[in-house]
Length: 623
Image (cartoon, rainbow, N blue to C red; front, top):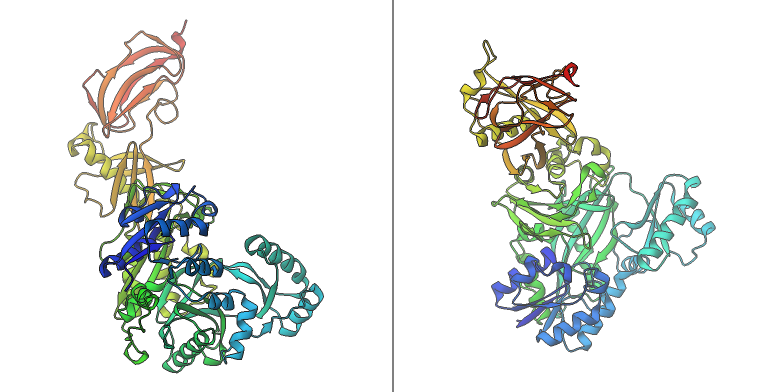
């Protein structure tokens, strides 16, 4: 077994690798950029080395800096995690050339699977079913259009060096082909430095099925069953599960054995994922599942495979890299229950899922599930890296049980002020079609409107905020009965994103089950994974605090703590008249116009109910 390991990555995957290394007694070395200096993974590693400025292009993507850190720290091996340099064959070669162990596949395997067209040709030769399409060298627009018409629309244009949904366009008709091709090529050139494309038939009801494979340096190769990663938004995975819903033993055997053949065809060693696209128009059929690509690394969604097999895939990687044979044979690998993972992103569903950055003043997640998190409360989400901040993973005896548990976990997530997709995830998991297994890659797009969070706070949210305000202010129920024949309740005005709401408070109201966090004047109420920020409005005379002819009223119960005027005083518009303390906050009431104080019905120390006339101004008296 390895004695020391440098982790050439950051965030949750670095923490994940550190956990396994700590259990196995392996010393860990973290590398970090300036933006990650205070990150949890830096603190948790046995040693940490700074490698440069925040941009990944100046730190995590600079192989020379990673190698220098490994050599200076005395690390024996390098684990690339996923992303960054994990599928960079040149870096893998540099690692081994420096006398270090590369925890990953041989560079030749990475290169073989790096270009989609070459990989598909290789897979076809190995007897792995590939998606019908065109992978020719002739990249002229005329040839590509002719091939698209031969395949039949809709077709998919894909960058041969692509990944992560970039350089990919669906084309529904010949008239749209030229524009889509130009756009696809431009994006591919910018993202990968290569504008070559291939064409594939477009599956009408596509599902993304992938198989976890493992191979060692002794010629052994196994699979650890399949995952379904069909719930995607703009080709980015959102929710993953294992096993795939609706998968029969016959189809599983066919697709998993095809994955093993794919790994053997490229002389693979270590952890890898063979990705397939399935046309599920008539359900999952073995002859309608085609090879798409291979990810020559550990995947973000590997925890669901760990959950159903009870295996530690990072430990498997480290043992294989140490020269050991695979820990289990194919027949020994168990498969129990169902596991689902949801990716918690720092993004705002209300703004088209744009990334949300900033300090995590409040960050709470359920304690009864597996949480692979990049951050902690008080940490900062920066604009420099992927916005995924955590993965929530559950395992249950059935798919229904796992989905219910994960939906409840997502609803219990509390993050503020950074926005997240927690509520969005919960609604996906509770959707009837999801629960029935009717999933495909178009699932989210077709239901987006119903999956987005409600824009307005519910009555429960308003009530929870108002109850918390009253509780903190210590307002007794008797306070509500100051006026003769008054309704034994009072109203609390609340502002939410520029809109005024009113919550009715009644004596003896039951405490809310919703959690409320107070930050200054803000009352943050969490409901189903969504934070609602309710603010007690500043009480000033005018449309909200005056009767329009100079009468200044209290808009809520409170205590008069300061009186700045007396009857007969001349005041200017906006001048302070008195200070009302309500909900343990001070509210200065001001003059709505120039005038003279005609009457004053309160003095310092008086308690008042809502809608009590406090001051009356007479504009006609102004000299």
